[in-house]
Image (cartoon, rainbow, N blue to C red):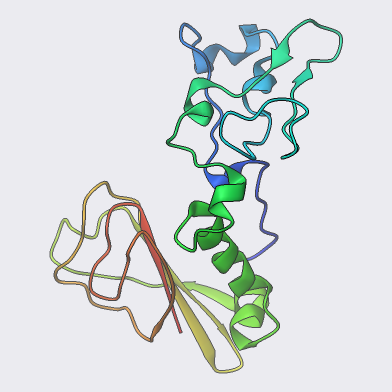
Amino acid sequence: MMPGLTWIYYGDEIGMTGNFPAGYNPADVANIPYADLWYRQPMKWVANGQKGDDAGTTDYYVTGSSMRVVQDDMNKSSAVKPALEQMNDPNSEYSILKKFVDLKAGSDDVGKTLRIGKIESIYVYGTAPYCDNILSFKRTLNGVTVTVVVNFNNYNINSGLYGMQGEVIASYNGATKSSLPPYSVVVLK
């Protein structure tokens, strides 16, 4: 929803993460051999995918080494649903992210406003300290205003919210005009 190009790194669209194995300190990345392989893991197309299956599962080796790149324990777990499963679930990470991407890419007034509209910080306020760690801004273009509110807190904010104008056109993690669950987003027009 911010100005500029939107980048989605391979796997982000289904909630995959890059995790160092136990015993490695990510702060010491310069001393970890082939550290980048932990960020470039094979896509989780299906659960328990195997190289060569009909789903397109792959693996690969780091060029010039014998290090095989595979999904880490987090990405193999049931916490990250496979891409093909998420594509058919309207409430999945993939479907929600697709909705947000489609909003910005759209040829309608909302899409144009999100791509090239003026950005201005706004203050969504309520009973302190409940509005700490909230990012809120609006984008405007030719009389169209799109408001974006993101709750970066690990707790729900459901009282004393003021400053959110318009109708909800997109939401993540159950956010509404009157309730911002932990790590949620609401977009209003």
